[in-house]
Length: 120
Image 1 (cartoon, helix red, strand yellow):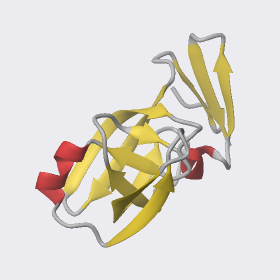
Image 2: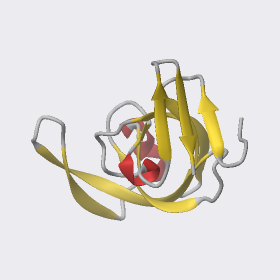
Image 3: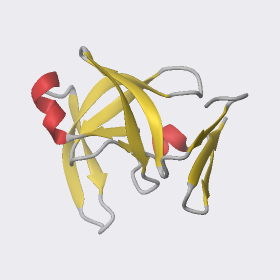
């Protein structure tokens, strides 16, 4: 899947992510959400396994409203692109979302609704 800092995902528009928070170690497919400014969102149901968050932060939603959510400090990496990175991880909703903090340092191509290409 990886070649010279380039990965292609045919599971459009998802990228494979490895994450670690307080003993919760998983590899998941995360939806690339260019409207989310954070690093990673995990499903709210995971809160039972990882406990209370380290801090809270306010996020603006697509409709302009704001919400305050708990933020966990963990580690995550997009598989195939190298280094694991400390990240603020939010538990909200029902899906894994990979946000702008994770992808802004990459060239990301949404290729015709079939393939997602990410490169360093």
